[in-house]
Structures are given as structure tokens and as C-alpha cells.
Length: 182
Image (cartoon, rainbow, N blue to C red; front, side, top):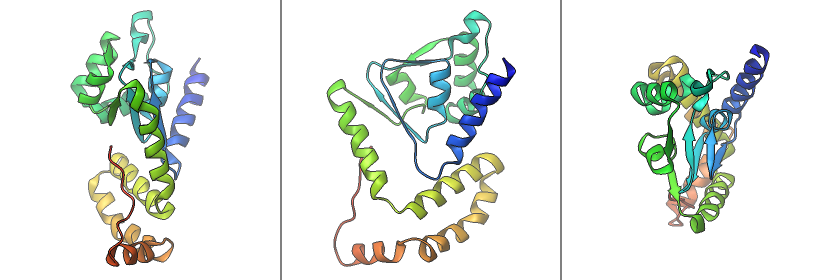
């Protein structure tokens, strides 16, 4: 069983290390291992009928793939403790209030919202996306000072290896860059 937990953690670590954004589009029940997986996505969007929780405690289990620390980092100590120790399940709206999801949509608006966000990510500079994910991960793992120290080099890479200059010229010329609301 420990090997399964290590495999899950390995998958979650690979998700966090990916240079492209990962969207978790959640509808219905997102419990246990599914919730653990969603917690490791960069952005979680929920349909209004989504439910989130770690009910394993009710049958004598804990999250085995590293999700408890991630849950605590995202929602705070109190909320993470309550969810993990009670096995409670929260609605999409409550998950939004806890910072577990960034948006809750109706059934009709859900897939268009997911597709809009995915399309937006495709339009972004891959170098800037990669650098932002790296700096955010660095802040979470080693602290904001280390992230701040690495930020100037990340900015320079956006110009040297990315297309920042061309995108800025578009903006300066008066054409609006694509933007997405979430």
C-alpha cells in the first residue's frame, strides 16, 4: 500500500513540475483520490453540482499521495484540518470560499468556461507560463524571499527566450492583447 501512495505522490510531483498549466474541471463528486489529484492542478474550476472532500478518515484511511500538505497550503490550517479529520464533504460554493476552486459555473456555462480558460492558456507565452509556475512553486517550497530573488532572472528569460518584446509592441501599438476573465 505504501508503494501506491508513493506512486500517487510521484504523479502529483510530476503534475506540479509540468511547465504547462493544468486545469481540473470538476463536476459531481470529487472525493478521496480524485480530490487529491485535483488539488495538484494549477487551477480548479467547478460545476455548481461539484462536491469536494477526503472521506477516507471515515473508513480508517488517510490521503497517501501528499495531498494533506497541499490542502493546508491552499485552504489554510483550520479548513484543511476540519476537512481531513471529519471526512466532511463541501459544496462547490464552499470550496470556492475556501480557495479550493477559482470559479463555480452553472451546468450551461461550465464547459464554455473551461474551454475559454484552456484557449487562453494556449495563447500565452510558453516561457512566461513556465517561469510563473516555477516562481510560484519556488515560493511555496522555499519561501517568498527565494522566489523574489529568482524573479529578475525569470523576467530576463521572458525577453531572452520568450516573445515578451513582440507582445509588448502589440500592446503599445494600441491593440489589446487577449484577456480572459475567471
